Length: 443
Image (cartoon, rainbow, N blue to C red; front, side, top):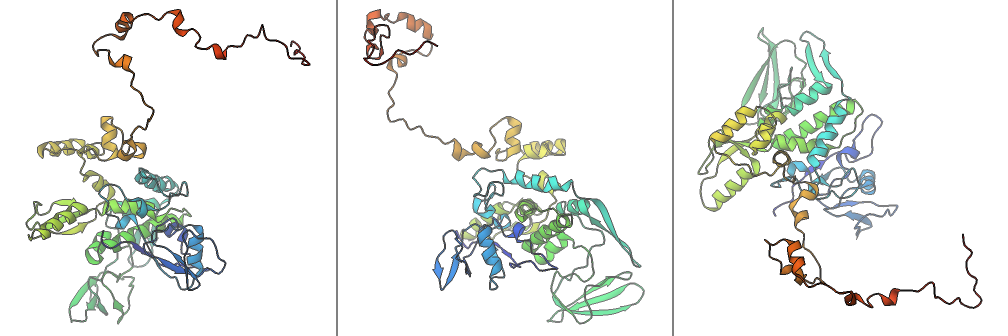
């Protein structure tokens, strides 16, 4: 349905002396979104290879294993690859097996029903115990404390504005740096159409740009971590998602911890699933309401098809705590935090819970929709071609006791079973000893 969406993996090449590209945690176990043509000088066996001008074709939909990754890494003509990702998956519930790729536990395709969200949370949380609780102090006239280690990971996952954040260019253009006139240094970005954006930077800033440099919207003018909410406003969802993934990875890699990107992507996906309504159009949404991205897209699709005015909204970035409380399931939200408020609001709004997630099913004691609890594993048909109904039981009235019914049945005499097993009976006492054979010695 529609175009296949994915993310680009850049830097598909061998590691250099002073630079690593971490393909093991970025590209390995992913599903290719496009076919990739690679050189295969050694004729390594690839799954579904097709000859094409002396090269090999890695088909779209193939999962990248060790051999495929090595072939792409060794080919100088392959610099970037597009793969499927949980970030671009628009499944109604969960994520598709194709967007997740290979299970890193088994080395096989991920099975339907696997709790990949739980695996992702544990893969991020367990190594989190190895992270340091530290902040970095940068010297200079204006000293700044930058969060590192675990505080930085918390800052990113909670989508907080970082201390000493970078000033971002809001438009693309040429930088003009003015003199400090006491209020701070003025930096102006002049766009091609003459539009100017002026930034006043107090103190003695560490500039990322020089006078006359060209910058793009979203580029940092002053050193420091970027505010993800500001980045979302300027650059959009995709850039913000990739920034969060890369920043979390930086913290873990500094500690020598290896986590696959797709685990972090699953968490970031949940942080960016909501849209804030600016103009409801002719929909039933309210201004300022936060709705699920998929519901927003489906509603607008229906409105456009009917010739009505669609709703307008902008993506919302929520920290994991806020995202957990903003879930459609009030049972799940109430079991997490602010129980009284969540239950009160759910009662006022007369909300119902469709019991789609794991937590709400655990709370009421139902089978969780994961693993063999998935509906498709429970739809079982019996195949018994030799089945025969037990007629003598079918005549029993449900209200009648089985013992009473058996007492009314005619008894079975001894002659009923006479000769039933005669063919299987061997008279050992009367058996004639075969000539030439010796009786076994008694032990």
